[in-house]
Image: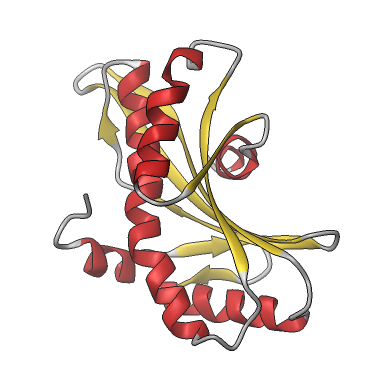
Length: 176
């Protein structure tokens, strides 16, 4: 569920891109629109993924810093990506960490996808949308796959897990 202030918060967020530097959400949408328009016949995938890094503080306990990435992949021709930092959140368990990451991606997608769609206004190529979650068959998160994938698909999105969740496990992770 998206908070009432999500629209305002996302509009104020600063996004980063290695080529274009710091950008507003409107700038990110413009850059994505331009990228999609460069080759309208190509196949595209739009990926949203979040990863986090734990910080342990003596006074506050364990917190995580969330990084959400937007990746636009042009099949066979590379892509571009943008990322933003979220607010640090307190977590106590791995389950809470994975939920915070997934909810961050879902909240972002709930606002971002309609804004992008409105901007495109049917004039750009279609794209496949995926939410990448940092869980997989191997490791401590394997028991969470059904519930996390269910949460993403229940919100109307395609979920990808490791090793196919590069948006979370590689791109966002790179900036945590």
